[in-house]
Length: 436
Image 1 (cartoon, rainbow, N blue to C red):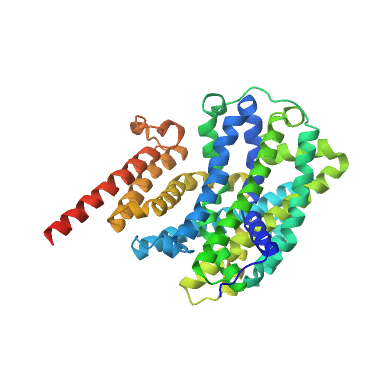
Image 2 (image 1 turned 180 degrees about the horizontal axis):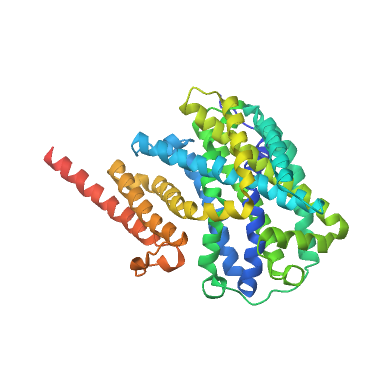
């Protein structure tokens, strides 16, 4: 007899995934993007939603289709290559960038405004306390649905609903003219801005946490696991869309209270204080702390779960190692961390997108192993060119590549390679059959 989940558990599962996704980048990037997009708000927002909601949702579904784990998705790649890609992604979303960023954003937006004067030791002390709390919530691996989905996320969602309603009922200004690349190519700029959330990386790895959480609830049947992963993904996607639309609109109407802001945290902070007066910082602090803490918990747990499967070090030991590394890296500072992460994202995001596309196209391949290897190689090579350009390296010799000027030089070569390799594989298979 197949095990099933109660409706409350399904909702809690979706809320848990939503909370894992909704972290630092999800909060700080949309407000500034909305302000800069101005009158071009809609195409910029659509581009952002494609990478920040659409891709993570499709990735979660791909994981379900593939069998529920990264190993299932990457089974046609050499084991060492698949492991290397996974390790790199875990390092990026774990101790190198995404997880420390949750602590930094929580400090910059929720704690720092409470002090008239701050110093490095404030950040050091907070990062230690923050990641100790994340360690506590990550400790019981099988209880993540109950801790995150049923406790922390509902409180977070209530805060976000209050903010969203206030933004639409009492906007603090009107949209101004678009600025920078949002003036000439708002859709592409919004698409690339969505990279910064790192949620496609997160989706590749959070899928394993969903499988583990389902197992803790007695769900082991493959078809039921797939069903619940997809349902959780849809709930999370709906929640993320609600948040992003609200924050983009907030940014587009923020020129009157946060003109000239250099990051989304400043825009959001000024806007919330304008809406709620002296209570604004308290509202913002609760939202940011909960959002960042739930994401940090999900990341640390996912990293610990994966690294414990590769080594003899236990899950709980990896939780401590990851949390300690995150607390250390968080002391670099938010601006420096973001600037360091951008070239890495441009290099790895196309590889992740290619893996998702390959999962759905697999049934059309006669030689899946060859197709996977060639397509991933092409995606990586052209993504490295995009990353080099973002890093300031002179790669002007490749300016003739389609979409290279907007940072997506990898897209057409990778797509073309995937299509061609499907036919090459079929031809090779047919030839092999005739020779046999």
